[in-house]
Structure formats: structure tokens, C-alpha cells
Amino acid sequence: MNWAPGDMELPDFGKVPAGHKKTAPGKSRRVLIVALALMAGWLSGCGAARPSKYYQLTVPADAGAIEKADAVPVRLLLGGLVTSHLYREDRIVYGNGPEQLGTYEYQRWAEPPAEMIQEVLLRELRATGHYRAVHMRRSNVTGDFAIRGRLYDFKEVDGSPTSTRVTLELEMRDLKTGATVWNHYYTHDEPASGKDVPAIVAALDKNVQQGVKEMVESLDQYFASHPIK
Image (cartoon, rainbow, N blue to C red; front, side, top):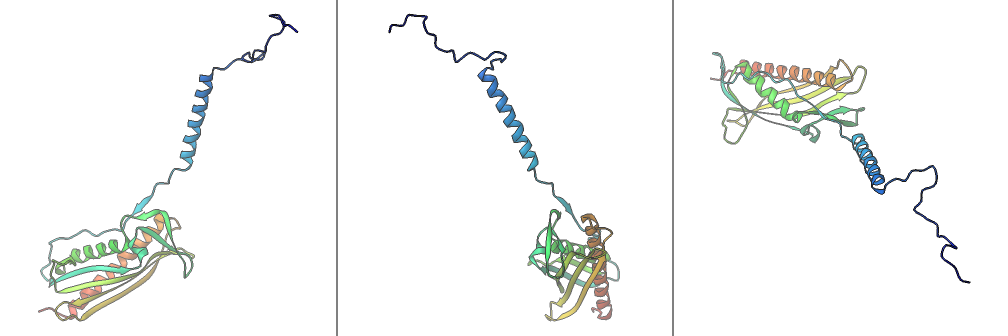
């Protein structure tokens, strides 16, 4: 059979059905790109990390070179506090029962607790003006007595009401004789005004200030009863 031109027409696949508008390929790609960008932005917003908040203890004013007329003629060297790895990091610790401890993820200390308490004690001893000098213990610093200690507890304690526990022990050694001549043990549960972290921090700060003042007074009593000639 012979086909004459015009006897049969091939369908035009480029034609758009009636009632529909033809969309340019470039426009379709642009719409797809915009949609993907919006979705990516939404997903990144959902996964954004929460900002961390940092807290610190109240540090007494440093009296520096101020020395009272009746100051004890000794140089005190303050060493670091031995403690658990939890208190050598910046996480705020809470107790969940007598055996379990946890840490807050986004609420942290500006410095590790052991270092902050050491700084508070240093500043408090200096501020009294009761001693010729008080220094951090380093290899190039000489002194008459060395103070060191151990931090056992520095945490939120679950209960009703919520409270904070600080347990700290200090001892002082005569560097001439090597004998331990003074020690003081402090432990106290200080109630918090609420369950939120700022309230916990405020209670821990109050607890530390109370403990440090108690230890400084005990040290004063030792030198009052053991005069240095």
C-alpha cells in the first residue's frame, strides 16, 4: 500500500492539553531550587544548638598587699584541691538519689568548681590582712605553711526542698617540720529558693562562702593559740 503525504499525521507530543499552560523548563527548575532551599533552612533551624549559660562563684575583693599591724608573720602557700573528675570540669552536677549523679548539658560553670573554690579561699585569706602573704603554691614561691585540701561534694541534692551540698576538707602542713598542724572539715546542705539552675547556683555560692569563712576563722584560731615568734 502506498501512503500519500497527508494521509496520516504523527501526534505532536509537544502540544499542551486544552486548558493547561505550558511551563518553561527553566522556571520549573527555579521553583524546585527555591523549595529545596526553604526546606534546608527549616531543617537547620530545627537542629540549631541551644546556647549555653555560664555561672561563677562570688569572689571576695583581693586586699593585695594590705597587711594589718597584728598580721601573723608567715607566708601561706595554697595548693590545689584534690577532687573527682566531675568537679575538675565545668558541668553543674546534680544528685538523683544517693548513688546516681548527672550533669546539666547547657548550664555550666565559668571554671571548674575546684579551681573556683581555690580562688575564693585565696582571696578571702588575703582580704583578712591577717598574714604576711598568701600565694598559690608554685615551684618558685617559698613559704612557711602549705594548705591543701579535698573537695568531696559540690552538687544539687534532690529532695523537698531542693538543696545543695558542699563537703570540703583542708589541712595545713608546717614546711619546716613536715608535720600537719591544722585541719578543718566542712559539710553543709544549703536549701535552694527554687528548682531552676540559677537558684541552685545561688545556693551553692552561699554554701561555699559560708564554708570558706568558717575555715578562715578556724585557721585564725589556730595561729592565735600557736603564736609565731
